[in-house]
Length: 104
Image 1 (tube, helix red, strand yellow):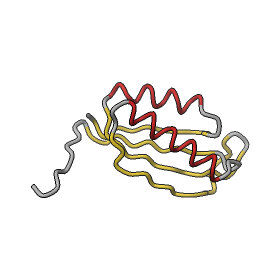
Image 2 (cartoon, rainbow, N blue to C red):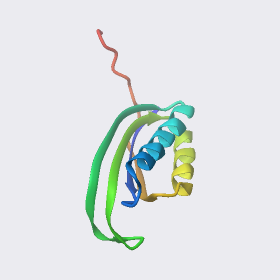
Image 3 (cartoon, rainbow, N blue to C red):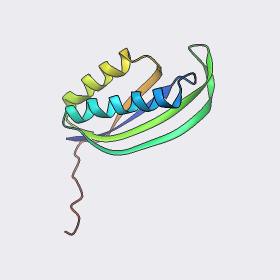
Image 4 (cartoon, rainbow, N blue to C red):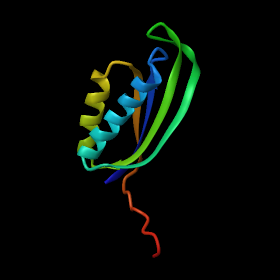
């Protein structure tokens, strides 16, 4: 498994419930692909440096997860077809993910 980070820019027009539903759906996609969620950071609504889809604001969310390389293709496919996600980027943070064993 490798360690990845995905940054999502969601539409400012989404209601909080819709935004949470999209994020839970994406977490489910990763979990079905044997990924491990390490962190979910909601950065909130931010002004954009330039308009994206004619919008000047967007809601940022960062996922950090460990997943097999094959899971990324499915995750990005779902992100591309999900309404409400304006932009995204997925970056590999490490070639090898070693889970921390507590008490060792």
